[in-house]
Image (cartoon, rainbow, N blue to C red; front, side):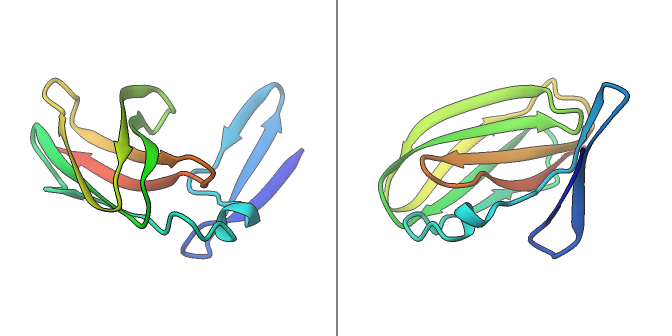
Length: 123
């Protein structure tokens, strides 16, 4: 099985199952997520790169439940923060002390919306 989807930058990523191993490309989006008009959120982290903490800003067009995760490139979830986002700017400070230097995925999941991802660099 091999499925190809497009990232926000129109670069194709694939999902493939070969000999029992599964490889998943990050940042794939589905048509249903693109048609969801209710959230229109924006995700950013500052500073990025960071040494031990960063402030995440989520701009939301409505009140909604949100889940923010820090994930390794191997898919391991290191931190989960569940909160109620309000309309407008929402700020969440993430403590990253003890995280190994490297690149992580900051993932935002909102009810009835495809997750949003940005790269987070810890130095």
